[in-house]
Image 1: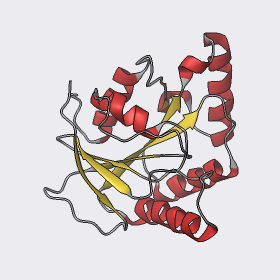
Image 2: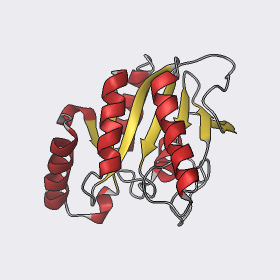
Image 3: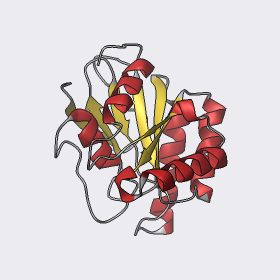
Image 4: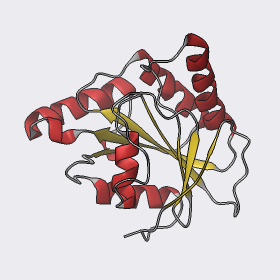
Length: 194
């Protein structure tokens, strides 16, 4: 198991981390299961705070995974916040992905039960512009049977224009796909040993 610890939360993208290491961001729409997946990745139940209310992450939450930092960005899309605050969160995500020099890869979470939204398609454009390595983590796989899950995964990947070899089907609840996800994330950081 890997040792992952919480570093801090930052409201803007110009924060400094010491020591300097590669950063891998975790992004996805509100309620896609980012905190649950980070907890499963780390093998800890309460490292990242989970909530039943979508949109609780409003800052860049940074976790130290030893050879890299995992940066949990705010969820996009649905959240019970005002229009101005929503714009601010969208700007934070956009600026982090576009400007952060230490960013080496993105883990993009998509819910197996949901078709990609307009916000998801905006993320595709943002990631394409930066030409970042992207790993799609299809979340909540335990909610569907295997046949339906495969069908949904193929449809989601076709909609966002990414190949199957850039995708891991996961369930934070059952642990499915978490080891593969962990290996892929460490590969982004240039360290194959998780």
